[in-house]
Image 1 (cartoon, rainbow, N blue to C red):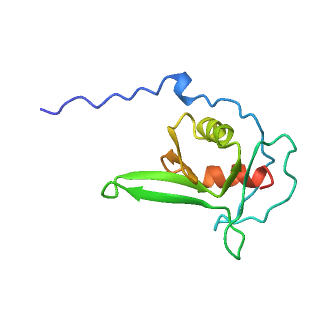
Image 2 (cartoon, rainbow, N blue to C red):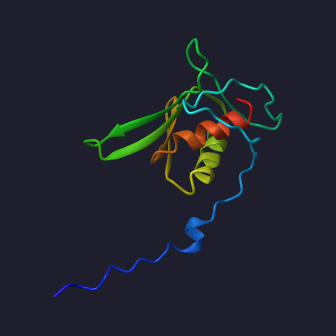
Amino acid sequence: MRGHPRSWEPAAPSLLAKEPLTWEPAAVELPPHGWAPATGAVPETLPFAVDRAGPAGSLPVYRDIRHGRTKIYTVVRKIRGDTEAMAQELHKLCRGAPVTQRPGRIEVDGDHKLDVVRYLSGLGL
């Protein structure tokens, strides 16, 4: 005898709702490779900055795979200024994903690389 199909219930609306960001980015259309030049139009009230990396000037946002390739983290490096404010923005941007501040970097649980790159590019960084 076959069992009944599994029922699926959507997550609670509070889990799906996204908190408003403190600094709203401009709309940026990234090419498939994910690189976009810095626009230089950084808001004056922005308390943090991210320095671009390497000769190509890419944003230092990386995926880090750990624990036997079962856990993915998004890592942002080269942060200047108020790292606490940036950690709070990343927490909101990534829909409440846990954010850990480490020396020289901020780590977000999950694969949020493209969202973070779009956000930072939209801020003009």
